[in-house]
Length: 226
Image (cartoon, rainbow, N blue to C red; front, side, top):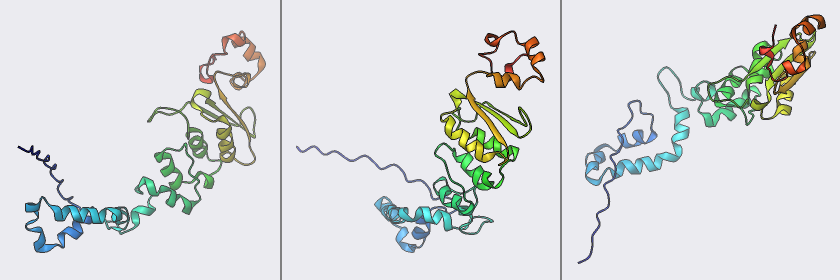
């Protein structure tokens, strides 16, 4: 006797969404009496509507109206814009999206472009944090000191093991600090003499507090003895 293998039953279809966020629902609702016996065929009509509408769902997500929101609004709101359309939105404010930027950083950059706020402390902090190799949700180790070691200088340090590309980071920071400021930047493993010097008012105090280079070579700037 021939062996007959029954195909496995298809999993149940998910129920329609409550806010009509799927395009196929609009088409399916307009099938009128044809929907009444759709369950007898395993909802083939519904599946056909889903297949036909799938290529247009992305566009529908942008143009459909939402509660208290007109069509297309979502595309021009950096907080709500779908991730795949952020590069399109970025062009309107002159933002160049970098590969090392996270989605949250891209949204923040579009909402308040750093190029429009050059020299502001918040901008320098944002650029310094951007692209650092840290776990999600954690902040990188960054030290920013304006007017250090003297007026007209901006002292910035990051950790070398958190900075994938120190050359790129320095270029980004130069574009973020005021145009008339000199940038003193380094990605460090431990403190340098410049870090030590920046922590004391004079060499006399420094010599009294630090017995020698070996005592501080493996420290970070905020671990220096006072």
